[in-house]
Amino acid sequence: MSSDTDLKILAISGSLRAGSLNTALLRAIIDVAPEGMRFDMADIGSIPHYNADDGEPGGKPDVMRLVEQVRAADGVLIATPEYNYSIPGVLKNAIDWVSRAENQPFKAKPVGIVGASMGAIGTARAQYHLRQVFVFLDAYVMNRPEVFIGAAHTKFNDEGKLTDEATRDFLVTFLDSYAAWVRRG
Ligand SMILES: Cc1cc2nc3c(=O)[nH]c(=O)nc-3n(C[C@H](O)[C@H](O)[C@H](O)COP(=O)(O)O)c2cc1C
Image (tube, rainbow, N blue to C red; front, side, top):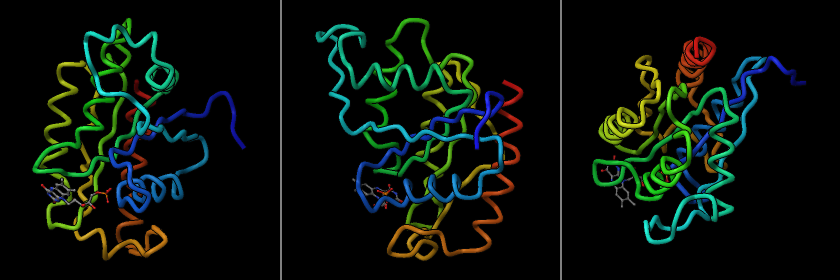
């Protein structure tokens, strides 16, 4: 059941692969979300490579869909993988496209950042790069709690379902803060 007062959250996974731990993390967050939060999952897989010679986002339906989703959302929640100590190119490319739309859609947008990796520090380095990107875009990125899911392959099963109770509890805590952050706007 959803209502007009629900928080509309756009979830963006920075991984395109079907078995993505980061997409699984977003699904786990959606699973434990309280009443009053409504999630859409963005699809950034069909967004073309940014080339300034190709003109503005207006002529690109896949880009404009994401632009409108960001505009319509009360908050954006991004799960980023860590690639070579930074964020994946596909995620940066999507953000770069959106940033070229009129009235830069990320400006003053409440943003949450989470991430999962098999390593010990759970995408911390990538998340700090992503935070830096949003400084220029003047988004309102929530500071804490930070969500670094390390050894993520041991916390999700083969179907991408979260099996680790402590992580589930932590995601509930995270969502409390994130919902309050988005409501503060
Ligand atoms: C090109 C590439 C670079 C990677 N670099 C890192 C890295 O710097 N740090 C890390 O913890 N894992 C790294 N990994 C492993 C990813 O964290 C792992 O593949 C993870 O599952 C990717 O996220 P996903 O499951 O959401 O697709 C890298 C993987 C790829 C494909």
